[in-house]
Length: 603
Image (cartoon, rainbow, N blue to C red; front, side):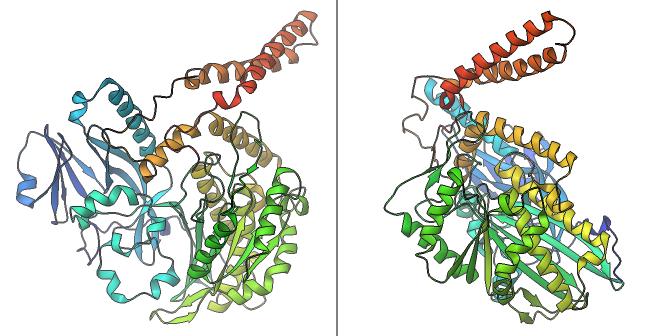
């Protein structure tokens, strides 16, 4: 019989600040010294140091003695340098100001970024024109948004961008290279911010950050510990928010592309199972207009077939045989998009396409109906398998392909489906590793089952917060296999939150992502992106949203009092009329009222 214990302490990785740095590792703890004319950053491990001049952002390598000189400064502890970005008035240095132990990956501690801040080296701002100062103020407001980016993880001595199978097959000498040279650039969130540090040869300070999700838990089987880690890596090639990054670009990179690895450790064996998700790889968009569900629009383009081919060629090269699971509806706009996707997939050889109308088959929140889908693809999944290696590093099994799942957002339906497939794989992995017999499943233990479900619920929430700004929907289906009343209420609140954020905030958030990721570059002498004139919607957004929310609240309250007297009925009708009028005004000018990206728009 299996026994499970939620081991909270096991998730806390020990600090390794006193251990010597292994080749290729980054400094674990740094000291920041803030002088009036410069910032000095030095390693507390006895390594390198450098200064950044406040006047223009020039980088000067320093010895430890030079870095420690001077006392007229503010001294603080930081935990990494995430990069440098250059704007109109100078440079801004992004540093990690607090971190949290997230667990360990392949024996190395993993940290979650709790907070970051930009150090300003922008004294040249006083020489800018008035328009340039306004532009710089907006860019700086975007940096403030970037400081609050959620779901960032890093390690000082382990490349987190490569899954176990990929990393185990690379040459041992690679481990002696700096982390940024080891990393897969697709999964480095701060890739664009590292260029100046790389040019300055400050390898010891260059930390690749991964955006995604990292959860780890421990339980016991046959009185022996099992560790399961769920690690997702978000691709940076089409980084963006839910409504402003849909589909693919001309290179075939898709929005919300995420690689998810389920890593299992038991009795000296390590096993990895990979799945991927990503937006439907066509050219399409969904422009916010204050409606709850904006219309989907497929962009007719002669390059569409090549876009799809590029996307799946890249997947095949990286992961092998690909099975595509399309979870979209067969009716309405989703149906049109799904049909277009199916038509393009009919032209792609060696990629299996399976459509599964999640909402129709799992109607009523019946999670178990996903078995219908599994029965269709079971043979392909078993053929693809999973990766397995022993304590000597010898490869026993390899995963030869991947399942690619998508819905519209690649969040809620996708997460439920991926968790179902991951559970099937976990049973197989533990059976092969000796933790379960060939007829056993993790479902024999409620505790193990609950631990597994909790990992996937938290994983879904974190990915949803990064893309949509709210918690994932349908978490009940993962946790309980069915929809519950508290879950319906939570989903309703998350849906309202998504609506508000997508309509009134995500345009600016998209600008911040475009600036940080390098899709928009700031250069001296270029025309301002804000000299557009016309309707300035931002000033109206708080008023419009406040009137709508207030009107709905007042209408609801007065209607509840209607039974008492006619006056309340008249009041409720007036409130309702005013609310409908404002909604109609806003709706008529929906696209003007919505928060829209100013820098790059749709790309």
